Image 1 (cartoon, rainbow, N blue to C red):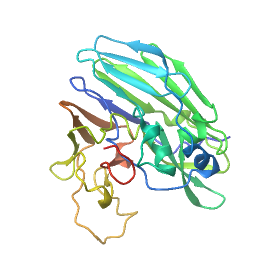
Image 2 (tube, helix red, strand yellow; image 1 turned 60 degrees about the vertical axis):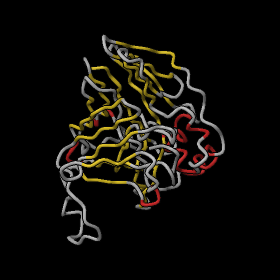
Image 3 (tube, rainbow, N blue to C red; image 1 turned 180 degrees about the vertical axis):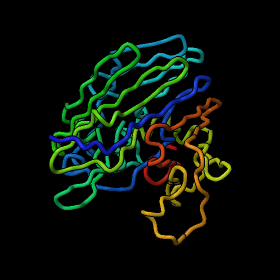
Length: 287
């Protein structure tokens, strides 16, 4: 195993007055998760049994010791938000790799350095189904360690209550990589607090001066929204536009669902970050 000190600290902080979530019902591009992923897609996700709990004056945070799935509860309203949507394993729309992502709290886009090919690797297929998840309870939250045995990767995710906020972070120094796969991108809680087809609400994105994406707007076939934080890096992109888009100037996003909402900020490695958002219809039944 080896470590590459090139990654930065990744953190998401959710302000106090609002309920918490992370990547606004985002979905990753289609990619195979290997034979294990295809087999896992044919079976239901394991039942979640939240066995560990930490809390403060505002929030209660629970974690399933088998899968590492978390649930945040706003004690003032009783509102709960799951890391993986309840009923996601029964989603009639999500198939194959999309169902793997839907039931995962972390998705890795890895580079096979032997073939120079990219692969999307999910915690559901590569860790939960293989019982390689370890949960450590902390004074203010949980440290969930995902061990990807086939890829020889280990990624810890910290879920913590921080006063009136909920913080999720991945310390780069604690990530280990093998001789075959290196990590290119991480997607943290891609479906946390996602709204279903029966929910009403919208996603707030910092596109230009700001924009909203309404739930269940029937435009799922148009594809997901992806915005590079602080605009495109011209060293990686050709100076040619096929569509007119606005730059993302602020590392802020949010969601309103059935009268409740949240606002989130990205910090640490935000300059290298992307914001993804999508609506129900083509990949899954969730916004």
